[in-house]
Amino acid sequence: MRYEIQYEPSYALAIVHLDTGERFRAEAGAMVTMDESIQIETKTGGGLGSVLRRSVLGGETLFVNDMVATRDDSRLTLAPALPGDIVGLELGPGQELFVQSGSYMASSPEVIVDTKFGAGKSFFSGEGLFLLKLTGPGTVLLSSYGAIAPIELAAGETHMVDTGHMVAFDATMGYEVKKAGNSWKTTVLGGEGLVVRISGPGRFYFQTRSPGGLLDWLIPRIPQRSN
Image (tube, rainbow, N blue to C red):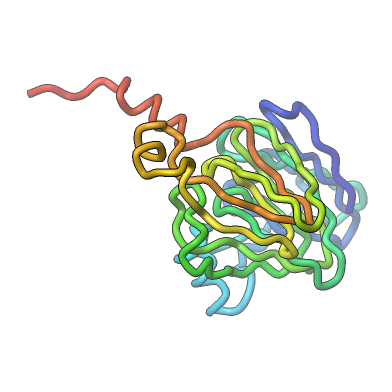
């Protein structure tokens, strides 16, 4: 299996090439085009408990599609729902990555996708208390609204990120959600809301635009039906 990403960062498209017998697992609705030599197998993507946690708690779809090639160099294209970026990551055996709900798009079938309870500290983008936990080995494709940018932190280094801009981070990193300012007045009236304080060692990924910010801009401009 090999892949390439084109048209990033605004309208990214992942092009996946599969040889005979190879498969790639994608969230329902992520497929854009595929060769006729690719067969789709719809699955739950894990045990019942894992699937229900991922769907009900992690905000992901209940089913996933395994794309299986029946000839060499079968081509599959994938894209996210919102205009934005795609990044491909290679996870080593046992390596864990925490991903915000909605940013997971596809992975090789060996990657285990489960949920992680945030213990009251992971209100990322208003998604709730749960993150997706991806465990390697395998290839992972993540998507975003806007471009995806990485930041590497050494042990002891910290960084603040708006909750609506977080995409993913290594499981080696510490994280907590806190007020943007020193007081709730600054947090509420300053327009920044809550931020994530993330600490190294490890790498985290953020998106340059926020879906919540888009909704805040869009909803007041939608015409209201009058009586």
